[in-house]
Image 1 (cartoon, one colour):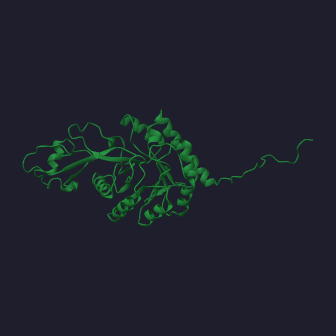
Image 2: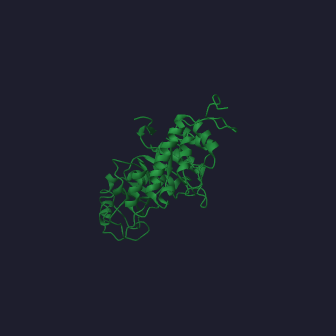
Image 3: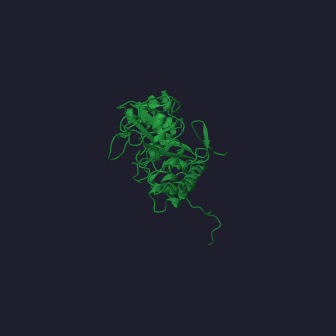
Length: 257
Length: 63
């Protein structure tokens, strides 16, 4: 495999990680995931409706032999809740890779960084491979890497906002300093945002709403796959320096007189 | 209490009995009794008592 994305010792072809929320049906979820080319998909941990458990289950549509399932701790506001959620997820049998998110504010859904660090420390000690959702703060990312997280996942913008990368300079610093993969998580709205993340040198992008909320989620999933691929190739190719003034492409010699 | 709903179970019922009664035998689920995760291997040997707080979770769509 050329240019694999290596996460927690495993190689992936795809640098796009997709969520499975907000789709109209499991069928639409599966088609969007297929179109995205993603090999890692996030899921949430929730109570079973015991009065009506339903016939179908999300995981019936996402075979474990094809996908790495990444359970999240969405909706947790304390380290304790997040740790509890992750322990349950592990027992449900999808592995030890987890997306840790401890929310600090309802309106912005920005992470509670101290609580995220506290939960990450505990989960790493319990043998989990932790991918923390975190603000685009290089110091917070460094702390999380140092305590043993297998990747850091700074946000581009608030979850579901579609605003794109608000602080490319912080992301560049995080990329420059990190010895673990940097995955942009949250805030992507359209394909150019995903490409930009990869162009900045981020290793992968995680998104849900940008695809699920599009008018045509399947088409947007394909657009994101192509954008991530293009962004990665542009990063590897080494872009030209941005200059204030023009630099002619055609030779000056030999012009007619 | 199962997921905050009251459920009556026969005396001596185990976690395995509860999971079967709910029709969840083949699903990827996890069970917590009084805030402690019950390993799958212990479903048969974990007896439930009156007033236990039980959580039964599965995976749903999320980002």
